[in-house]
Image (cartoon, rainbow, N blue to C red; front, side, top):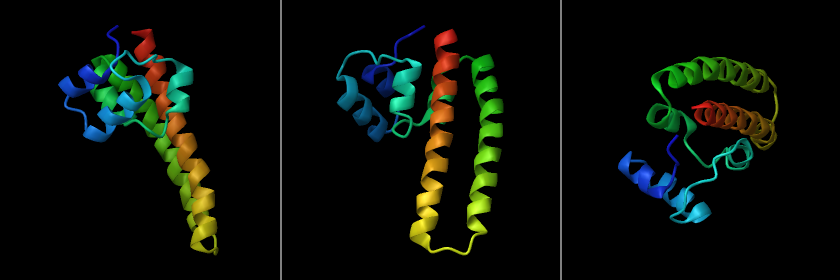
Length: 117
């Protein structure tokens, strides 16, 4: 398995914000891609893009299938919040943990498949 680092992101033509975010975390070193690292930085990285770039065809297929169920659950939860007659500040406070959970789920899934090779 190849390490993920700034040079590899640049070769894959990652967005500058992704390259800069990884550089701020690890400099020019390899990212310590673990489940814990993925969870800690779940809202920082574009996991869907990373799946297309760095997972095998089978791994990406698995990632997409599992993310579909994550997304459906997330959207259903958001729909429930949308139905409430509440102000936008409170609505945001309710959406944020849903979005954070969705991002953590994708991050863990990516790391799990990537580490499995």
